[in-house]
Length: 281
Image (tube, rainbow, N blue to C red; front, side):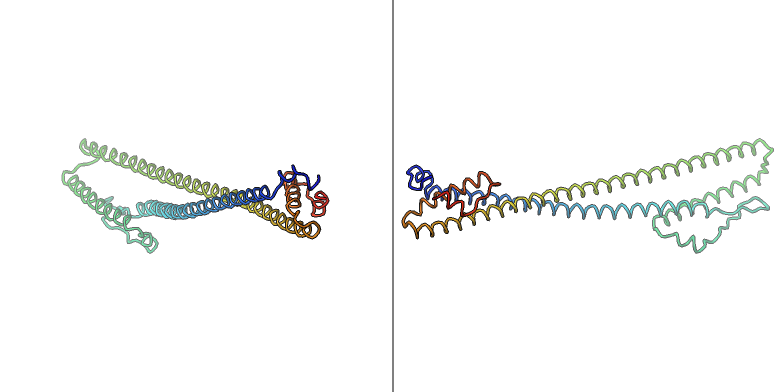
């Protein structure tokens, strides 16, 4: 291509080169704004992840505390209720009304105020029931009820029915409490699993954002390198051509611009400064 060609001058003049440089600057500005938006999104995701981790840690601590308290209450209920039964006299078969003093191991289990309160209330109720039972037994002795009599048989039948009913109610209450504790434990476990899954999703989103950020940074770096290369090549060609042919630097700049445009269209085919000079000549 000849440098003095009028069509070449009109199509590849200095304003066209400036326009392309402005377009490249606009593209760089857009990429920088996109990079800024990605960084803001990363900051928002990091803040959400931090809040989610704090919430998960608080929920996990509360769930663990509730589970431990439930386990302690269940252990206390299973341990304390059987050990506070009164002893029956082996000779007369009458309740002696005396209770065994709790050992150090039993006393060490009175750790929860609510359990202690419930135990005291149960103890008072048991004492009242014992007094009523003693009164009934005294009345029975006063009226000389024997197991062989009709009244004694009816009374013993009522006692047996009451004992069976109390045993069935106790078993039902125990099963209900155990099933409730198991359901609460399952719900807490599912909540912890959901929180961990959410944290993993946030980590994956952060990794994807980091990969996108690296790609944008590499693109910006490549564009800046090409822009610097173009500016250096234009300055070099202009200076050399001014030495040989003064006043004809515009044609040289237009030729360099055409070469850079070809390189932009074919990024895999790199051309050196010597090839550009040969094309201009």
